[in-house]
Length: 452
Image (cartoon, rainbow, N blue to C red; front, side, top):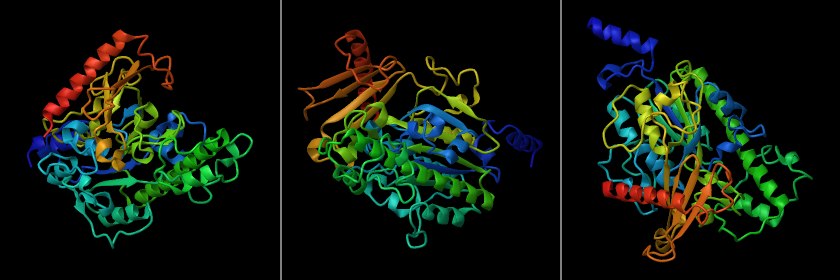
């Protein structure tokens, strides 16, 4: 081994953010990667994001050790497009997996494929890739019988089997998705927080605890019922958080925690009555692109390597793949639409800037969804909602007819003065709306021109 090679390896241990070529970084020092995605997750219901309830003591501890992004956004209002964007660093119009009948082209560069080329095992549980939406990602599907178990147990079995290899593991935690029905004692853990006491299990609350799809507007909830439903959702978060504590403790006992990059994020958010109902596109059959649906958690932890940062710059799901590659010192391929966020995690001077994003941050966020998500009929697939979001404004565009030529609808929200997106001010600010509309249609044209 040359003296230069020795120097490079020494620098890697001393300065973990030194960027090296792929050939130079292959070795035992490269960390494992655990991508833990949470279905239908509201970051503002985590303690580390400012929530008043004690929902996430274990996740909060992780967040204090790594980078926490306060303004991370999904690319869609349902699971598949956002997840494929994570693995390809492409917007949904470009990767094309934006309806339940779609499949990724097998020649698309993906995160699992790249990591496997660099010596990583990339096992995945069959239930995550058993529908066409998730084919051709490049994962190695493991034996179903060997890793069976209730949610969470299967991940522990998988990690135990691969703990002596360099691994990239993706695990999708489904426990926050409708129905909201946490196990005991989590079903009542926040009941006492409800003013006046939680109501008896009414028909509406029982429906929320039993159904995974509830059409928007099909049920009327009283104020007390709404609070009871939110308490159930928060109970599910606390149940998940206790599992995360168990997971990290077990990884520590196996001796792999300190050498594992953990990325905790989500496919999309979840409405909890902010705009009249609950759920997201696939559960309500009525997509929305308000912040409660598209804002997601993003926490990046590498024990003893990353220092704590709180980053307020807007970021996308498509930024996760290049960030992982950059953290590992691997080359980022051309053609990706996301940016590495590594500079944001390192730069103290810009980490709290809300107005001017640093390199890696974004002035504009773009999202797109079909009306009913995975449950969409062919007719519903023709109706799309798209939005562009800056730190100050959001424009939402809905093509209300299949041909997109009639009945189109626009909504404009002043996020600085109306963070809950309660008042459409498009008539008051036509110039702002016009500028954002131009940016949105430019994005639509650009992403579709690059597609397939």
